[in-house]
Length: 254
Image (cartoon, rainbow, N blue to C red; front, side, top):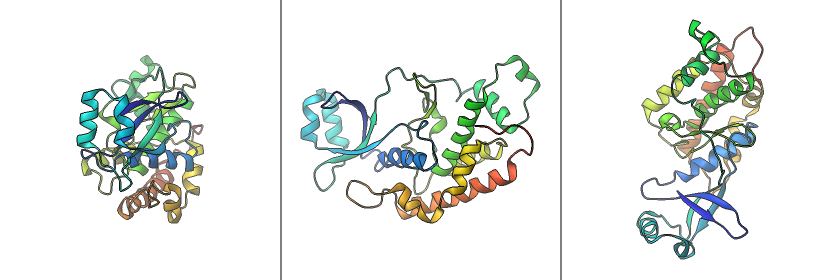
């Protein structure tokens, strides 16, 4: 990832296509487009497809960074290196929700069965639990295998919204089986869901997912057929979970 200052003053992170992670930048773009379809724009930062030539980038890079980019970048036929451009969020915070004790606390809350020790812990409010519930479903759909490795869950310094960041581990044609198993366990343990996401999930047309994810810079599909098939399968899985696991009582989450 490179931090770029563009003409006009915009500061952004740019994740290029590289030999170490070919195509992974597409996950960032696909995540934003899926978030838009599900009404989660506040939780997944804006992302744009942007390509740059090495000549355009070289003057602004330190020599070591320039050498690394030249060795690793995968230029397209037009000579530009495609990538995902994401506005830089100054002051981004990282709430301790991806590690204990925070992780266990919100998982118990979403299971609808708080333990005795929760009386000694400050509870998450309903809005935050709604975002965490949405995160569980969102990562199920995207097949994100890298959410819980650390530093992939942020908090906006102004709005306070939970940010589902670093989505380049999502939308693989064949996600790692062990990571998918962990995500399925999270989904299976969730009995409280965001009401707004449940409505958006029901309205998402599995037959039109190619339109949701759209095109890449070259005009082809952003996601390949195998990746789309995986999303369709996980969409059906998420819908079954919501239908069978949702609590019959209790106030719905936002």
